[in-house]
Length: 493
Image (cartoon, rainbow, N blue to C red; front, side, top):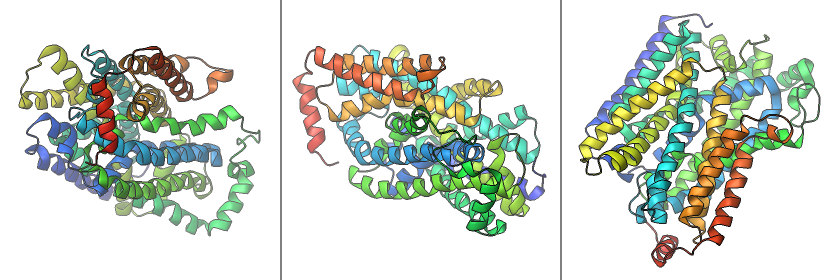
């Protein structure tokens, strides 16, 4: 446990108050549901890029990935490569087309509404199925953020885990409840900056204190030479294709993450995507590289065996820096946690409001009513995620991995084909979504042999096959749908 100090407490209080003030600032600017859920499509390139990446990486950038690198060494590079490539392709091919399509196709403000409008699904089945998977997997994703927050407050302040978990949950709920999408995006912008600066400084100072990069590498070789080999485990055995592919398979997840895709939908203009992509790629490449470096250098710098590898960043910060600086650095973990959990709560709330309440309970609800229903939904989802976090036995990385896989398989293929293949049909979207989501849920319960592959890969592949097969076997889409597809392809908005 890190020694408690009043300086660290003050830094945390100031930081949390700043986040809450942003929420209050945007409180009066949410006159309708599109404002609360998508910020009126008013994000600039910088906020879009930074909020997308901050909400993407979450607490696992400073806890999960460094912890994995601490335990496994350069084996962790395969996760980073998959994430880096997935980030680039998502920005390069999905962002611009999704921004245009969601506006042209009925000004869709959520992913579920986009699917319904894209395929003219009057049955509401597609919208309901997508909302179900959003809520299901976001419960686990949000739970991972709360677990990370509980670990942070437990280590920094010596709090009982339950008390620490409760405090972190209350803060995240508060500013998401008040400010909606714009508050979430602007807090993510500042949190992304703090995460970026911190993840660079910590390993740089640690390596300097050890005696430089050469000395650090020599020390790692003396501990276990396999820590520096990306093709072997720490036991010296060659990594199998299944092992490497499973790590790289995080790549598939990007195309189906609702909280990331929402940023693409919210940017002011599709012409701003290129600048945002460049900002995002610089952030993600450096951040992922430094996160791995934190874990690896931690083996040398700390010179102890951590009971929980996910504490490596916190242990290094508390050892390197004086209290006031350590407080700022540790606040970066809170930033990473909050920047994802708030986005997940908001997307889950939008699904409950738009896809359940408005569809099944009160179709003619006023905009003010819908905003308040969304705020209540934020609290409801957070409570369920909190209960899951109280009983969570998995690590932060394991919880994130499951949710990431679920979204990637359920939504990724549907998003890609809906944007780039005009022959895709409504029934194939439903079938593909169910196939991808259920494959992840079922595959996760099976172990051994081929079932050791990360569940996102078979889920993504099977969903893609089902989408193509059902589309080709079914009726061709209507002329209205085909004409809209061509309009999206040729427009610039």
